[in-house]
Every structure is written in structure tokens, then in C-alpha cells.
Length: 373
Image 1 (cartoon, rainbow, N blue to C red):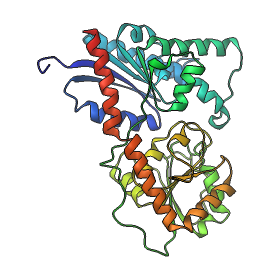
Image 2: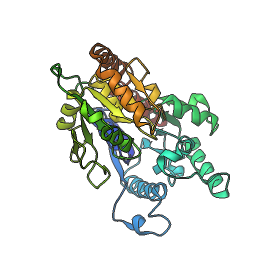
Image 3: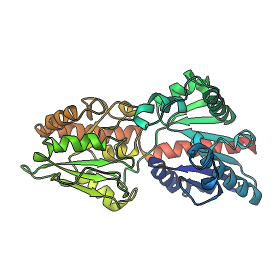
Image 4: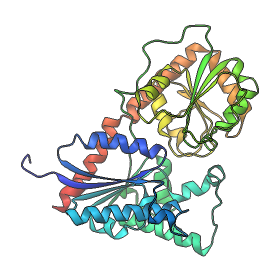
């Protein structure tokens, strides 16, 4: 076995929001695996290329992302054959179905298109309904799920959609959540002194969809009297309406997995994400790894990570009054906050340990590759 050459594997990775962190984490562990010779093919959301300028394609992420992915994959195949193929997500797989069939392939996803359609109001788009276009899109995505040798879903929520909406047999699906490096993301060694204002933390790249406006409304209506709020969101004007609200700081330059972001998370008292539409945000899992109680909504697969009244509180979306009430419930009960924080860390260790979860994915990749030899 030691004389066997490593499996040359292409990792085609969507680069949007939390998928960037997921790709970084996967790469960290894959680069340590001596049985895998990784070819990293990252697919950027924006790039000044032909696909960005092409009418009808430039404004459609699925089309331009899949075309970028196909171009990179074909270039990799011209250099040498591949033993295996890993693609995350199906959004960038649409123009490579023949490669998914030819090469032992693992297709990974955080949500199906049907999952996203059911959250369409929060994502700010309208499903096309029972139209010829929608039926064609459905068939194309189903073809990608069928073409792959095996599927990895981040959550039971996504796995159930694969089965019920797309007719994929359960034996072809594994639920493997994204992982957090628990040696990097960990609780602070010191707690905030009694009497200080509670420190809330919000981390989200799509500020309004992630519930940022709900959070700001709660602060404008008096939550700032009791709490301080750190907002981590990219620069570009997404976090509007902050001027004049005391106790709010915006951090537009913190990067995924950075020491500054990890320190800020560990030093917070509560993580708040009153999101309107989401799948399974890695920022929530990072906060849990740092031992924080979480206040969020039950959209997408969030209730699979945040268990109501165990490691956090679940509130309705677009409801600043419920958010304020939840914060005040925890602010007035330090022992409960501590117990929820301990539970968060325990759940992170049990379900979201990067070494375990990415190890599982890499083992699947090697199993597929070995079968092709």
C-alpha cells in the first residue's frame, strides 16, 4: 500500500460566502493526506472573463460558475488523468455532467434548488413555478445528482430533499456536515467581568438576508442600552442604517479563519443571526465551537445545529421584538448562558469536528478512486 501512488483528485469548489471557508478547511486536511494528490480548482463568484461579459450568462451564477468550472476541469484533464473528482456544489457542476459520469465523483451540496426555492422570499428571488424553464432547470439539476457516483449533503434537510424531490435513493447519500477546526476555534480562557454590557456578535456576508436589518431595528429600539454589538460583514455598503446607533461596531476587513475573527468570536457573550434564509451557516458552527449560546431562526438546517433551549434560542425571522426578548432572557441569566455555551461546544465536538468530517469526505474520495484502479 505504501508504494501505491497518490490518487490525483480534482476538487472543484464554489467560492461564495461560507463555501470559501468550507474550501479552506477541506484544503487544509486534504493537503495533509499523502494518499491524495489534490488539484485545486476554485470557482470565483466574480471574475473578469468571457462568462462574466456574455449576455444571458453573466448575470446567472449557475451558468457562469458551471462554465468556469468546466473550463478549469478540462484544463486539468489535459495535463493528466484524474483518479477521482470532488465537486462542491451542484451549482458549478451543470456543464460537467459527462465528467461526473466518467470519473469516480463525489458531489457535495449544502442545499438543493428545491430547498432554496422554498426559502425564495428570504433570498429575494421568485421561483419560476411550473413553467417549461423551471422543469428544464429541475431536470438538469436532477441529472447532476444522478451523474455523480455518490452525494454528500451537509444536513438531513438537504438529504431529505434529494430523496423526496429528486428521487435519489438513500444509499447514494451521506450526511456529512461541514467541519470546524476545534483546535483553532475554542472558548476564551477568560469570561467578561460582571456588570459589563453583554457583547453580541453577528457574522454574515449577505447582511440583509442574514437578518442584519432585524438586528439593527432591535438596537434602535433599545437593545443598545444593554448590549454592545460587533458586526462582521464585507465592505460595500451592505450594513446600512448603522449611523446614530450607539454600541455598534462594524468590522469589514476580517477574513475567514483569521486570528482576529477567532478572537472576536471567543470574546463574545452571544452569537446572533436572525437570518431570513439560510442553509447551515459556518459562522454559527464557529460560534458554537467557541462555546457561545446562539440566537437564530429555524430556517434551512439551522435547527440541526442549534437545539432550542439547549445551546440557544430559535426565533421567527423578521421579528426584532422576539430577538430583543431572547437577548434579554439570556442577558438576565448568566448560568443559563454558560450552560448553553458548554452545550454548543459539546455539539461542535460531536457533530462538527473538522478532522472527523473532512476525514470522512477524504476517505470517500479514496474509496471511489481505489475502485477505479
